[in-house]
Image 1 (cartoon, rainbow, N blue to C red):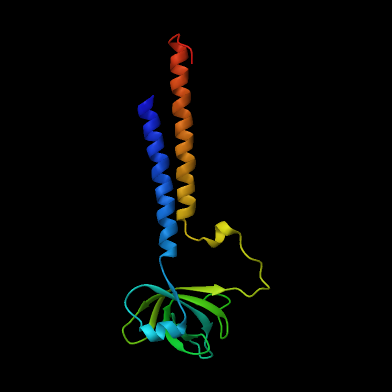
Image 2 (cartoon, rainbow, N blue to C red):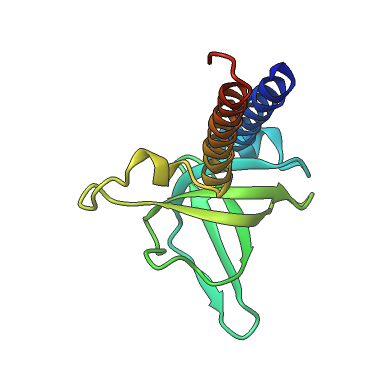
Length: 166
């Protein structure tokens, strides 16, 4: 009985550790303003830059390449993104660019996160946290609790059959 409870406890602990790790990964990237990014220089390390989309946006549909600048009103940083632009992407919109530098001062974006204007409703907290890790980790916790319950029921049932009180 103790061995099964130990395994169930280890499974729950592993699920909680997984949730903590995936949550930490999302928060590990530091946000910079375009002025800070310009002052530090864009390195090959991953980072995020938050600001507004500049007025000059170039979209090459054949090559699926989007070029624009992100600005904070003081400084701007050029961005290259490979992929389709988000639906509400456009000049003046608030954006968070996640990517790395290319060594020339340009950010090579992996992901564009658009900040919606206040006229849109805010999404629930679970949807904003993003990533499937939250759902997979939650499923692992539910599975571990279910396995622990089944194991304890089987153990209590086997002691009743043996003529011992539960």
